[in-house]
Every structure is written in C-alpha cells, then in structure tokens.
Length: 196
Image (cartoon, rainbow, N blue to C red):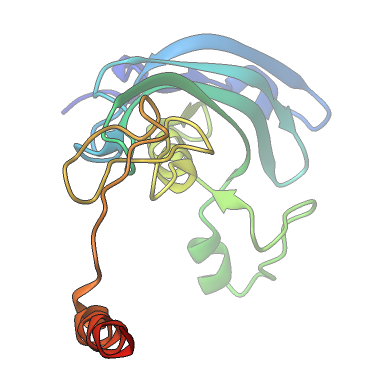
C-alpha cells in the first residue's frame, strides 16, 4: 500500500497543524495529475505545475492560499492554431483537522471558522500530518480552463468556404450569392430586362 509521504503531491503540514496562527510557505513544482483537459485544451500529465502560497493554521484546520501556474496546451477554436502558454490562477482551499462527516455524525455543529460554503475543502491525511494537493490541482485547473480557447481575443478564424486563415489574410472574401436570395436575384434580372 503506497504511503502518503511518498506521494509527489503530499506536503508535510504537521508543524503548522500543531496550533493556530502558524504558517508554512510553499514554493515548489509538482507534477500535473492526470485528467486535466482533453486534446483541445489541457495540461499534460506530469508537466511541472508551480505552486506558490502558504498554509495558515486556524482553530479548525488549515487555509491554503496559493497561485498555481501550469503549462497549458490548447488549440484555438477559431483558427485551429496551437496555443502553448502558462495559465495562472489563484486558489483558496480549506483542509479541516477532522472529516466533517464524522463530526456531523457525532452530533457536532458543522461550522468551520473562516470557511465559506463556496470554498473547496480537502482532507488532511495521516492524522493531519500531510496535505495532499493532487485533487486540488486537478479541480482548480479543470475549472479554470476556458471552454473555447482563443489564440487572441480578436482572432478572425478561418474562411468558412475555403479554410484560409483570416488573421493572415484579413481582406480575403468570396463573391457568393446566398441561395436563399437566388429567386429574388432572378426576379430582379427579369424586371431589369423588362424595363429596357
């Protein structure tokens, strides 16, 4: 059975968890977990994800505040060009000292100081000695990836008729009559012939 301390996402927090008011800085690279995105946009499994922040202890657990930066691969949904850039986002998560479900089943009040309902909550492992941030990284990055990535906000995309990149050829166009108006064009031509 794998030990939590051998996990590449485990951070020792035993010293911080000993009493409220302590803080532990984190500034390190962690491997990207699997399952972040797909072929269109995502983070390659094992890529370096930089985490810079801190664990701050409060009475009921640890508050983790950090900036996460990951190398995102994507394909522009308008022009299909590959996009490779670092994606940076902020995260705040709560690591309670004991499982809330156990506390609730024991009849204790399920209120945690400083925790909002919208905050993400993750368990501490090995009796509060380690925080495993694998799920936090996956959840945060998946949530932050755009559904329709663009190489730039004003990307013009591809010509719908011939596939020419309109960013490189902004004046490109085709003289095409909409078939819905073909009957009107014929009527116009007929009226013009009758007037002559």
